[in-house]
Amino acid sequence: MNKLILTIIIITSISSCSSQNLTKKMEQGSFAHVVYFWLNNPENQKERAEFEKSLTTFINNSEFIQTKHLGTPAATDRGVIDNSYTYCLMLTFENKEMQDKYQVEEGHLKFIEESSKLWEKVVVYDSENILK
Picture (cartoon, rainbow, N blue to C red):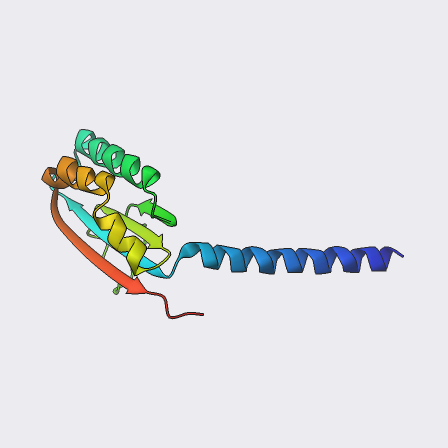
């Protein structure tokens, strides 16, 4: 009897994990928008806080973003890594149409207006998911 209960628990756990992974993939969206920011004064903590506040206010209130990640360069050191940026923003959207709406969203335009004076360079990479 104990083997039967253990087997049921294992099968239920595996099924649950697979379902969660599938749901997570679906939530990530098919369109990725990755933005690298180089601040004018990356050592200035006041300017960093101003940038982070403006950006997080915007992305936390966007109606189009599905997933979000705001990070700083990781402590990695390999020849293929460029860690010269100050911040990396990774967002996903359901599709290109939702990302297009995000581009003209009031909060996005306000963030650019408030923060563009703080950066010297921005590089954007957009991609559409080909994994099924």
